[in-house]
Amino acid sequence: MSVYGAPPSSGEIEVMLFGPGYGEAIAIHLGDGVWLLVDSCIDPCSKEPATGKYLDEIGIQPGQVHSIIASHWHDDHVRGISQLAEKYPDANFVFSGIFNSQEAAAFLAAYSGSVSPNLSRGTNELYMSILGRQNAFPALHRTNVLEETLNAKHVRVTALSPLPTVHAKFTSFVAQYMAQKDRPINHAPEIGPNIAAVALHIDLGDDAVLLGADLEENSNLGWSAVVADQWSGVRRPATAYKVAHHGSKTGDYSRIWTTLLMSNPIACLTPFTRGKCRLPTDVDRGRIKEHTPHAYISSGASRQPAMNRDQLKRLADICNSIALVDAGFGAVRLRKQIGASSWKVEMFGNAQAL
Amino acid sequence: MHARNDVLKTSYSSYSNNPTARRQGDASEYRPVEKVPETTFPIDPDLPCDSSITRGAEARKRYEPPVAMGFLRVSMDSIPLQIWEGTVVDVDHAARMMRVLLEAKIGEKSQHTGEIDLQWVSEQDQDLVCPGAVFYLTLFKRTKRSGIENAQELRFRRRPSWSSAQLRQINEDAETLLAKMAALPMSE
Image 1 (cartoon, one colour):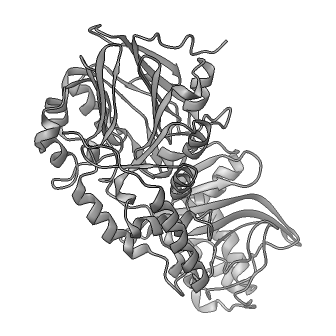
Image 2: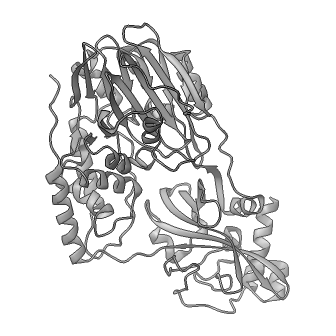
Image 3: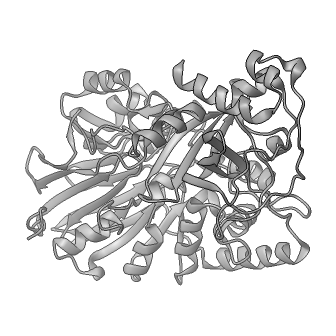
């Protein structure tokens, strides 16, 4: 029997957040058996995409997945998303609108196309997902990802970001990395700060959920601009928040909490480890807990290296801040009946209260 | 630091056969006894032939050895302890450091992140250090008459350049992608 128990009832909303220490995936039940999958990470035991395995285990049929959304193309958010796209062939595939240009498409093709298929896992997942479908949908600020009546409620999923100006900025930036004759073939570079991620607002008719993706703060292009936008500012405040950018300071903007969220919302997040960068930091945890006492993290496990002592001792001579990528797999699940005032929180694996 | 001294010692002993230099650690005494061509051989049948070899950063600081030296290259009598395929995630030139993702090739295929000082990268590979670049980091043991020697090798994968035919194919692939992109409605 699955550790996850029974699927949500038709009238039950669910947000399931998976995170293995480096990676993030979300499965959302919007009601009436309609599901969204946002981003993807790999279950370290089965090596399958975590959300696909989860839906199988609780008995969800492929036809129930309405959309698969790649919030952005970073490796920790798209591992296995092309497998999800293949597993759910009827689902819409939605991705950041920054790739809707000749330059950006050429960027994806150069680093992941038929010429050089394995130069970057992030671009490769996106390229394969788009290529395998009849249609794929780029999302920008105000794009309607889904709008349906479910359980007699008007449910609408819209993209808060990226802003249209980010599209132009990315296009010019990516031009620097275009394949050019006689230039060496390298892997695709990561581009930061992350202002191109698709943050989602899910209006459930009587409540809302905010998924912050990895969107970072930037006065003109990031959270400030999103929150200041007139349309964003009148969205229904959410009672559940997937904290942006692994709880980092760069993903935080105080007006998210006052404008887009109700007071004391349920906040959940995934950790991120890369060298010395380990999110959330203790300061980040403290800041989030000042905003809400109801905060949870999908994996609180140790990130100690997993290798024998001899190897570690010798590697440490060369390499500092060694940390295990998949340190401990866990998930936070939020469920609530339509019309109920509060969420029920469950934790699996290495998940814990922040 | 103890671990660093160990490396220094093994690296140093391999740089020179001159016993005086070995004992005193004097840069002026250092004389390379062999210089191998840049082209090396694969350490694993699945790995490509790459460009260079580096050793201990401390030893480099003291002796400034020639860029490509073959004394510690992975050879037939070397026993690899672990091989990692690394990808450069980003480079901090001010701190002379690169953040990397390491994927173990032997045994448990675990992934780790870490930070490597750019001094470990040979001069001839410095131009390859950029986000997305791939390198191989090998820890190995080598049996010598004097005993077992610990050594390490970090070499970057030098890839070919884009060709005209590849660029044409990229444009075709990009057109295919663009043709699949359709618009969703916008919210009012």
